[in-house]
Amino acid sequence: MSKPIITNQSIKRVPLADMVAQSGYQRPTNPKQVLSITSKFDESQLGILTVSHRDGKYHTIDGAHRSHALRNLGYTHAVCIVLTGLTYGQEAELFSRQNHDKRMLKPYDLFKSGLEAGDELTVTINNIVKSNGFQVGSSGKKNYYRITAIQALYAIVANYGFSVLDDTLCLIASTWPGLTKATQSESLLGVAEFIHRYGMVDFADRLREKCMVIWYYYEEEMRNRSSSAVSTSPRKRFCRLLVEQYNVGLASRSKKRLPWED
Image 1 (cartoon, helix red, strand yellow):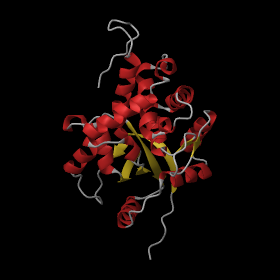
Image 2: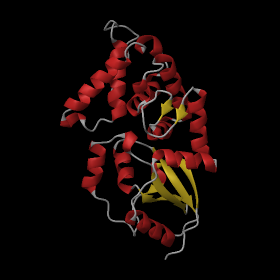
Image 3: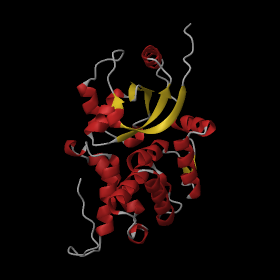
Image 4: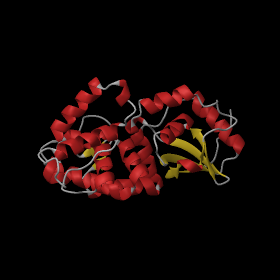
């Protein structure tokens, strides 16, 4: 029986430029697998990558193909479990163990352990969620106030930072109070993308009554999407629908109309 590997860990937003995605103990990167992840990309299903911080670089232990896909899609950061204190040999052993037993922690289990450990990223996300009247919870019966799309929360912070997460939850709370769909992954990511692009504008005033219409069009698009639309991420698809509904009723030359660029 092998000895346990002793290491410190935290959850951090890591620059992809500082991540080494290929090591001698790993299989060569499969371009077809990277393409598959890229073409069917969904932030809510991305998971959290595992890296070892050694010699000033973040060596990927789990998530090499996902990190390549993120680069292909123009991402600059990823949320990772960061391990410190490992040697190259210990990284290789840990890689072997993880691939032998692929049972992964569920997002809520990882979130709870981060809170218990006082992980700064997780604690800050939790504080933002609570300050806007929500709570982070495990999957189960859908509940507007219990956010189970934990990966989406991490993804928003990784892409845009804490302030956009705060604004996203604030807008959702003031725009669609009580509507369960409003706190699902696609809504969270789409509203975050909207804020990143356009700011707060008069979001609530123009979109308060349109959540279900937006969801209807989103679900229709997902059912009927063509192969050319597959590479567009859910957050961009949902954001585009937000923009379209925002512009409804505005004259074509109105300065209030929002532009859209994919």
